[in-house]
Image 1: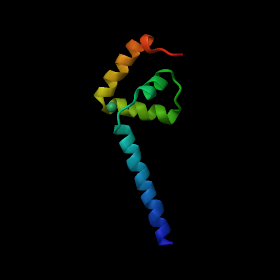
Image 2 (image 1 turned 135 degrees about the horizontal axis):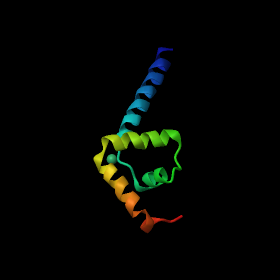
Image 3 (image 1 turned 135 degrees about the vertical axis):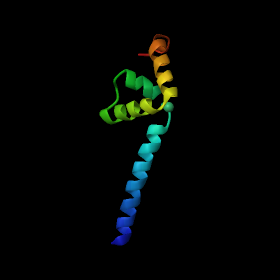
Image 4 (image 1 turned 90 degrees about the vertical axis):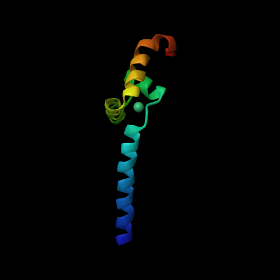
Length: 75
Ligand SMILES: [Zn+2]
């Protein structure tokens, strides 16, 4: 019984850690694009917004994407 608890607890910890890592990991072009096109669900949008708050690099990327989107538009 205790072993099961330990496994569940460590999964919970891993999940939280993954969330933190995901927020800190930089955004790729397709994520930014989907965000701009409003194709992401609530959870994904929050993740990107949270990352933009902490990462200046991605904010720059985001701005460049916004102004340069006509050249890369595929849809
Ligand atoms: Zn970033």
